[in-house]
Image (tube, rainbow over all chains, first blue to last red; front, side, top):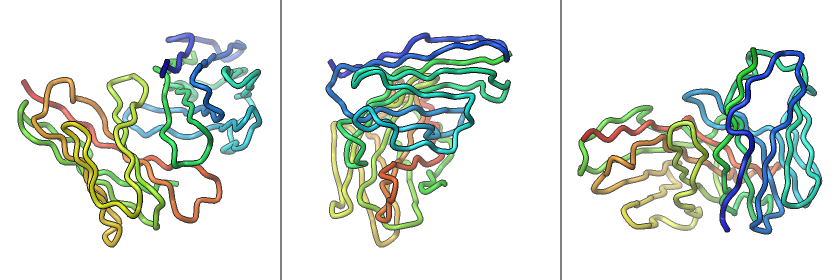
Length: 114
Length: 113
């Protein structure tokens, strides 16, 4: 199974809502990533978890809160978002966090903040 | 910070023709990867080429790396409609303190029927 799954596929939320994005992989990968991608732009790294510990936070605003409950699951908790946070949110995993390994991406969650 | 810069930004070719995309980068690298992204979907890894390699093949894909020019090219031969996608290079800089790859801006490829 070389699949990374993400739920939901689409999410519309108001600026006062709290929601969560979920990501799951069963490849035994020990590194998991959250990326944000705007239209016609490359993915921007947000967070990296390595062996279930947060190893990289790219100075992401605190309204985004990542969580790694176990080695297969990655969540992104959203609270008090702004319209400019609307984007495609991609989850990825790799064997470990060394950049010699390819990353496997999920299909993404299309987030719209109203 | 942007490391890779793809060229051209957009490319339209007829089905069956070859498509060539280039990636230039600024600092020395350990390796370079190419990814494909179909519209609104996740990225798919295509090829990883290490700094001591000059060329790699995978099916209809050919990747070259010229470390002296700090550039890489991705050639797709006998293009098909399904090759319509955005293509990103991603580099692992030599002085990579954070162990993260850095994506270029991407080339949008459109295969015309």
